[in-house]
Length: 113
Image (cartoon, rainbow, N blue to C red; front, side, top):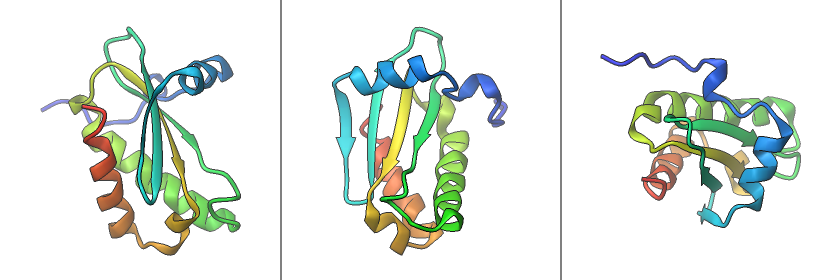
């Protein structure tokens, strides 16, 4: 059974990495989430989050959304190709519960591969 942790090497941590993803053309948008990604050549997927105050005014709600995204990625990271993914949310995300967020995100993950 593969490890399902979420180590630092599975995260986007540098501004240059985020810039490279935002400059890329691959994206998938839904009612709740917007995903942007580029191939990374590292042999594994990495996750970055860009959850703004426009999405949810409350820091508590933003953190809840981030936790759901990280957990979903952690469980599925071995299914993805070697890409850097940035997940952004739309204002509708703040109105949904954890299960609805997970379901919306699962639909979005399908677009990556």
